[in-house]
Structure formats: structure tokens, C-alpha cells
Length: 321
Image (cartoon, rainbow, N blue to C red):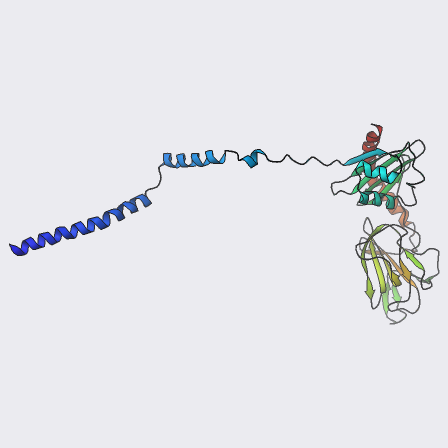
């Protein structure tokens, strides 16, 4: 009987030990595996939502939306146009751009009077879109978009700057005309001459034939000092063999603005200006088709006039208030 009693006691002790060990582990496993019930989950989420919907003090004091910036500034001329325009809300850059557009067309010093009223219209990019000035004797209106500037002195007839007839101040002899099959005077090979050479002395002022933006201004071993200007409606002009360049890439230039002086730089046989006019990637014989400038001006006016008149009506109503 003795061996049997020893085995029973050892078996009970063995079970007690593993019960004490396994039961807590099993309870932990059951708690980990069994998910929340739908009610418990809903209750938990509703608490979170309830907490999230309570506004914080910062949210309760959130700033109001910024006011919409006006697109029209208007006023009357007091002591000077510039000071009155600043007081109306127009920026110095906007006023400066306006005066450059109006150069040679309207004098904001001598042609304005105390009875004059004006209005600026600004586009989404904070750039000048339209301007109207009116008094008892004068009316001046300018409308500007990606096609260039359009002008009017009566609100009925609109005009546009024509391309200048020459990139130099006066007519000079054409030393080499536009010729797609010209024999080069240096290489003696037949190569296209896609521009016009003018026999001008070194140092002759060279001007932009239309308003635009300078896209190239640098030196090249063949072209010498040269400038390329991009104009509205796919027009591009090139000025080669300059002695000096007065503009840099990215500069905006006005029609008739001096961009350099003629010279004899690069590969040449003598002092001259090589000038090129391109339209939508195609070279144009500038000397042969001078009436091309008139045609372009008419096309641009037709495309812009409707928008220009709508902007004019808004500014006229603003001035009449």
C-alpha cells in the first residue's frame, strides 16, 4: 500500500502545479482572442466621437476668412496722378507698367487735370488688365493681355502698335537680303540666309521693333553679341553681330526701346546688323513683307476688341459712381 499512496500524492501535487500555471495563461488568451461585442465597440466609438466633436478653445476662436481682394481701383486726380493712383490702392509696379505702356501715347504729367477720374482693373495674377482715364478734354484707355496692348482714345476705335519698319533709327542700305539659297561669303557654301543684313556703322542704336520679353542675350562665336526677343502672337526677332547689349534674358522691353548697338562681332566680313523676323517658327522676309505688320495688327485687334470693350464698360461704370 505504501507505493500506491506515494503515487496518488505525487499526481495531485502535479495537477495542482499545472492548474496554477495554465489557468491564468488560458484566461489571458481568451481575453486576447475574443473581440469586443458590437455594443461595446459602438460604445467605444461613440465616446471617441463625442470627445472629437467638442470644440477646443482655439477652434472656437478660429480667424475669419481673409477678405476678397478687389480687382478694381479707382479715384480722382488730386495733386498728382502718381500719388492719387497710389492712394486708390494701385501698386507702384502696376503704375510703372501702365506708364511704360502709355509711353508716347499719353502724358500722365501734362495731360491730366484735377477734374480727371481713373480706374485700374487687375487680373487674377495681380497684373494690370485695363486702365481708363477720363476728364473734360481727354480719354485714354489701354487693355493688356497675352496678345499685347490695345489702345483707345474714344472708347469706340481701338488700335495696336504696329511693328516698326526698321530695327534701326533710319533706313540703311540692305547689304544682303533674305535668301534661302544664298552662297555664304566666307564659307562659299550654299546656306540659307534667313534674315536681312543692313550696312550700318558700328555703334548705331538698335531698337526692338515691338514690345516683348528678352529670351536670349549672349555671345556666340558665329553670331557675336546677339539678342532674341519673344513678342505676342508667336512673333520672334533676332538681332546679331552687336557691339554692345543693353538688355538681359528675362527683361521686358517696349517697342522702340534701345537693346544694343550695331557692331562687327562674330563671323562677319564687315560691320552690319543681321536682323531676323519669325512667325510661329517660320522665317519671314522682313523687307519684302513690310505690310505683314499691318495684317498682324488687324488680326490682333479683332481678337481682343470684345474683351477690351467689356473691361472698358466696367471701368466706365466705376468712374461714374
